[in-house]
Figure 1 (cartoon, chains in turn blue, red):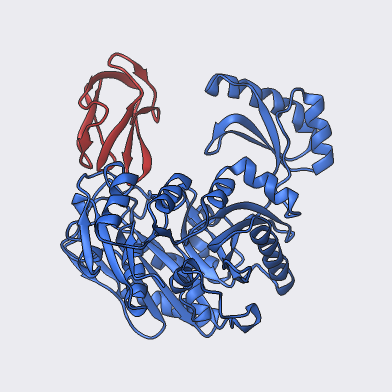
Figure 2 (figure 1 turned 45 degrees about the horizontal axis):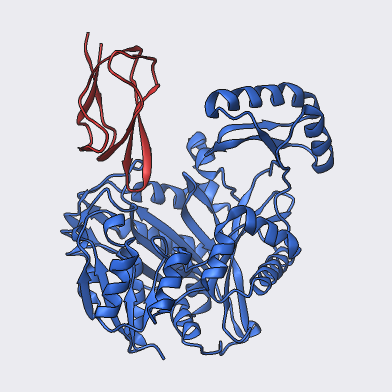
Length: 449
Length: 71
């Protein structure tokens, strides 16, 4: 069994891991960059090592510094949290070479899923559906043939594009010719690369994911879905489990697909398989996150399991002691991410917290990284805290979330708390069934609030 | 008439897209700021010409700092 863990992360997730380590009577060692010296996770760990530096590259991303801190303190394992080095196969290898147990999957699995094209091919090979898409298209005739095969609407995408630039939606075959010419021209101007490809356009897409746990002995658990469609700038803001858009049949299919993929690549430890689901309940593999997810607490609240504990036990070589049919999914859970950002434009807002009061009470859990007096710097991501609630049903969970958000006070930095409060009070959100365009729709229809 | 362009955020100047003397249109990106792993463009508030760049790439800025003067 692991005796001492180095936590290669900061903020709320470092505190989250320390909590479980304490319960399991495992010592914890924090590492920190200069701006985090006064952060609660540094104090709450049994020991702490200052790495120096301000930026992630000088600290939490510096593999040698992190490994040396672990060795210097006599750690036998490293928990990477999420972000930073958690999905870096080179770091995982280095841990192994240094005699440190990495609490997560193998470097091979991380490498395989980290390459998006490779991950897509793997899913296809294992019989998991992927969003239908073409290779590079040479001519309009080729595009027309491909579109006839997959059906409209489609997206024409610049091969060199990204983040929505160089993308055009085509609804009917008649628009294809003009669309093709325009997309290739624009791609040439914007990227100096005229190559385009075609992808099926998914209507009213939902971002749905399945949590998995698999041990070194082949035991596998899959969980109920998490609905993660409320996003801004491709980052999640609100999650819930279960989803109002997933019926038992679709849930079974999603869990089966996640099972196939996890077993097919001999995946170990905790992971998440992300899918996009359209309005016709078609689902497609999007990507795999080979680590603990930010939103893991919603699964914890409806199952009563501690996923970090499971990660540590699996890494220690223990078999999972539960059977999938033993897991009870009870009630409904939501997570709302509190970001240091202005609630209108979602622009980041660093500063010093001068007032801080967290909500508490039945059904409320707050995973936070900071306290009054802490400075939120521009060097790291804007997540301040996660408010997670559970209710016997969705209505009760919604009420509990509203109560918790109303009681949360953070002064000194701008936060998105007012935005979150409005969302949880809006008929649009309360109705459920929302898709990844939720925030745009919410902003466009003030009358529907 | 000179017009001051303010930084929309606290962070760092990641990339300067325009040079002194360049003509810019309303909403055109003059520079890109970086903060908390997000890239935020500084857009021109109106049509004009860049008279002065008050910052260089890598500089730290505070929200509402003057970063560009237009004429």
